[in-house]
Image 1 (cartoon, one colour):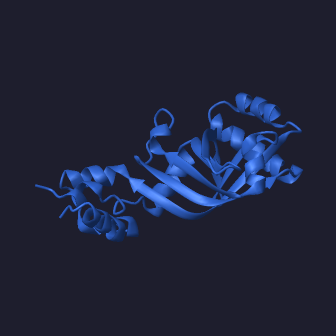
Image 2: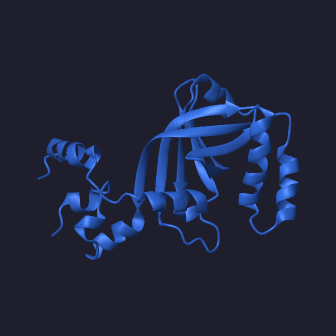
Image 3: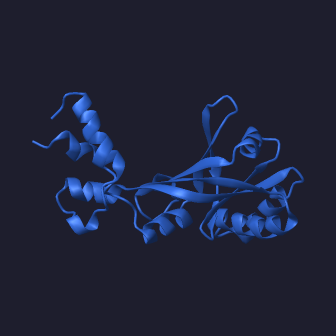
Length: 193
């Protein structure tokens, strides 16, 4: 009979670098998370562009999340392969990036970002993309650049293959501290051997 560790150890199933790129370029939505001034974690679903190792997102300057980021630039972004568009063939998994957010209000950033962002969200309809650029170009709009500092990665296909006994040890990643140190300590605390 498998032990608790067999069901709870998931840090050994990370996405590899190519899978991460495929996920971030193939999925159009993320959950953008920040902290409120009274300490509550909050997140919203937003469309994003992945470019040059950074998340690029946009919102109106009057949104609460913009005030929160001005106060504390520490944010996280979560992307799930389950949010892929029809026909998405990227990895079945998820990536969470902890990072810092930079707010851009300059014309130069808006001029490259709006067309690339609109094209990502309208890949087969250039007319819709052009119309979206006009909608985005508002005096209240800002562009958010999230620079990842730490990743939490999960490859659901590796997890499934391991459960089926078809994943070799060389396909697994290293066990991270949550599983290598914290889980044994929690099992001991609960009296589970």
